[in-house]
Amino acid sequence: MGMESMSEEELASMIDMICSSKAEEFRMIGYEYVTADDVWNCVSSKYKKQGMPSLHKLVNDVLSLKATSLMNYMTISAYKGSSFD
Image (cartoon, rainbow, N blue to C red; front, side, top):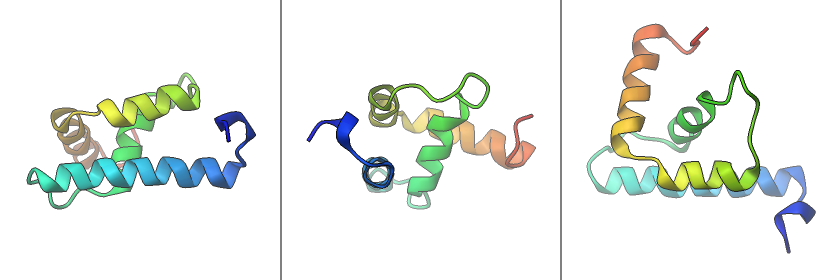
């Protein structure tokens, strides 16, 4: 089944699974408090002003996310709060 034929629920489930897998990867290298939501918020935050890209780009962004980028995002969001406006 191609991505274009997936329902919104199936796409959301797939993204959640990928974010959960990436969070688990971070936990395995010592970032035990990282969640799938942290991964998603970090990746999606850069698209708040320009709109969401294709699913392919989002998946690639999640898979290529580095621990340093996630930690920088989490530090800034903790300092500024959940809104970057």
